[in-house]
Length: 224
Length: 266
Image (tube, rainbow over all chains, first blue to last red; front, side):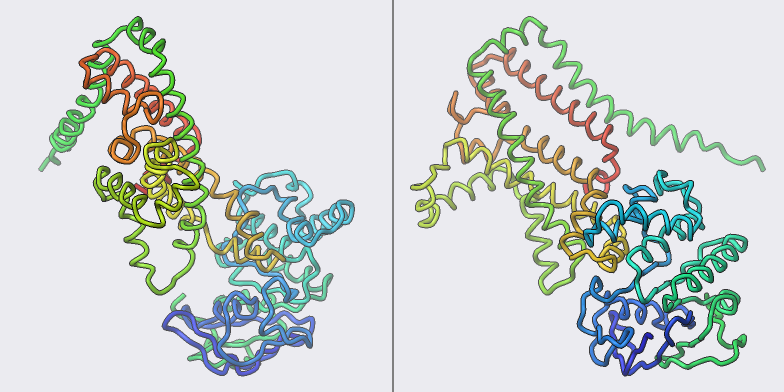
């Protein structure tokens, strides 16, 4: 479960005050809002990349408010994937495990599992330079999932993809949720993407997060 | 109406630019024709010039390593962190670039005549000794390395570092495992630039290290000393060696693909 309780966070001159919402265990929640509404700032706060001024962030019954990103048990996929250009696809999948000093055979097993889950088997030895948009995002997803995070934070991961690849990635995200049981907080401004992947939906409007029971056109951000 | 030709525009720009390129090439060609391989070979036999080549290579290499070692944290912090007084610090870091070289030499000389400077020299003599050559070169070269590395880090997506933090890295691991490998080209560019700047440094060395043969004589000092005794052939021969070194540096920059980093930092 992801729970934000009265979170106040500042990013430059912009700030969000007393934001509260919660995502149920194992659900795929989508947070929508206009460009500049603070969706990414909230996501970064959950990841520990943006310090919060007050409030509490609880991930799976653990108060992580003051924990470093590495200690929060999260996987993070930014909009552009932010792959490491000097590593191969396989090395991306192994990165978090090497940092956490897994032994070589366990890393190899886990990399194979992820490659199968994300259909990256044939790309493992390839450099990430020259991968297609969809392939890059699958690698970024695999890298984030490697250490079995409880929470997955996705920052507009499909926004740069064409319609066909986006549909493919939505299917991949569904498979990931079904197989891993990870709780997902997914920021997007695409209503169709939200309809396809979400179990829960929230809209961030003027600094307040509203649960959205039915997905209406109103939720879609007009300026994006 | 027929569109007007772009030829006059490109021609005028080409002529102006071409004149400068012609000047550079003419200087090098004049140097090359002024001397002969025999003269160069004879110069290379000189004990003083051999010493000056060795000291130049050693001091420039040490300066380049030291400059990158110092510029790496400065460049990183200046590109990634915002803090009070950053603009002032930025201006301070540019002082060695804008200050006349002789003033840098004089400032170093005065610094080592202060009480702490004299105390330091009782442990390790600096002024008019080999360490003064390295310090004089470092004072200028490091500023260029800082500029280059700052530009390098500014062009590396901070998201990669943030992702590394969520994957279990400490700040230090994220730097060494994610940022550092990506900054490789910029580091080569910074090191090469620092090396090349050091090789040509003369003013600060003349003031701070003196021009003592077989002691603090580097290649620019040799050119100066040979000219002062009217030995123009030897001065030109040593100058050509420096030209070859400069060409070597340019080749390294091209091969390492660091040209863009260098261009942006300059």
